[in-house]
Structure formats: structure tokens, C-alpha cells
Image 1 (cartoon, rainbow, N blue to C red):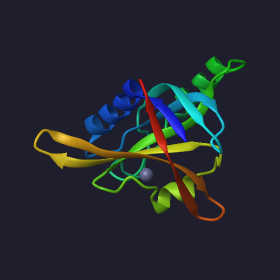
Image 2 (cartoon, protein in one colour; image 1 turned 45 degrees about the horizontal axis):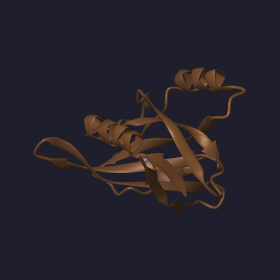
Image 3 (cartoon, rainbow, N blue to C red; image 1 turned 180 degrees about the vertical axis):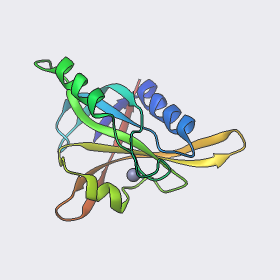
Length: 146
Ligand SMILES: [Zn+2]
């Protein structure tokens, strides 16, 4: 289970809609254990630095991540996962996502976005943990808090 306050989920949905038809991405900060419950306390947007085409891939800015890790060092919170969007694709990990999942303890939040008259419209956000070695992912429940 991943617990995420509604305003932080709204931040992710907004990023996903603004980036459409490209993928957005960012980092999730919080505490807890993905095998039990992770509580998200902060969300940080990243520029999408992928060089393979932003319509179907993403790369979080490594400097942003490094700076955040330094800032969080010794504190109660840490980087527990990241989020990205899937323009015109379902909210589940793609084959590329599974291949890129080098960190099994990270939670993956994926928002599916479709075209609408006003631009991108987020339709669904799901959370996953990915077992890269087995080429599998497992969806985990999202609980919203206010
Ligand atoms: Zn993806």
C-alpha cells in the first residue's frame, strides 16, 4: 500500500496533463517499506531528460536526485520511488520500464493520460513494484489521505 495525500496526487496528475503528449517524471519522497506501507510526504517534479523520445520514455534528472539525496541525508524521509506518465498508454509498467527497474525497493507510480478537447487528461494512476530479474511487476494499492 502506498499512501499519498490528495494534493500530492493532484500535483502528479497536473504534471502528467501538462507534459502530454510527452511523459512527465519526478521523485517521490516519504517513509516506510514497500512490502508493507509507504507514506509519501513530498513530490518533486523533474525535467524529462531522456534522449530516446519523450513520448514513450523518461529519465529523471540525476542531479536533482543527487541534490535531494544529500538534502534528505540523516533525516526521517528518503526517496521512496518515482512517477511518470504514459501518454495514450495504460497505467502499467511497459517492457522498457521493467528493463529499467534497477532498484527493486522503488515504488513506481504511473499515470495514464489521454487526449481531450482541453489537452491531456489523466484518467488513472497506479502504483507498482517491479522485479526486474523475473521481468515482472506487481500492482500495489494507493490510499489517498487529505
Ligand atoms: Zn513507463
